[in-house]
Image (cartoon, rainbow, N blue to C red):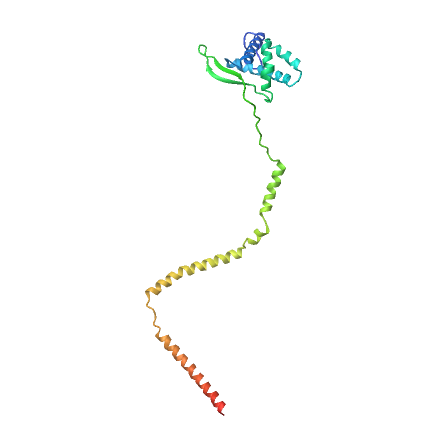
Length: 228
């Protein structure tokens, strides 16, 4: 027997596999969900979704009679076909694909075959909004304009040259030296006795005396000239 290109071989021959898939699809559209082996669910999924796509095209007005006859080749029950075209297809009108869902439920008791539930998706479809990326040209121009905007005439005038920085450092060192010398002088003043101020006062008195005498002599000279 020829093996299928994809998936497991169900039954003993290709004809038997087509009958098994037709029966599984009929039960899926009739009940909405069925429990079967994982291999059968994976093989049934593309077949069922193709039938739903044909029913949806017929619902949208694209070759309604042709699509119905194509579905009748697989599903022989006209009642299930009517349900597919009138009830199931309108619910998937806005959904672009992914009409079925497979859920694993663990191994089967007895032969330990992996089981799964395949069902129709009944949730409302909500399209996802993709984030728009900026164009490559706009990003490069904006990045090139940003450094130009940052560098301006004010930045150039505010920057100090090497000479100004050296002068500022020298002034800062002088201020630090005066700050450090001030406490030492204060400590020395506390330790040494204060000098007496009598001698400077005497010297100032002696210096003021000749000045007063010269002033008196000048006044007397002017008085004598006036009398003459």
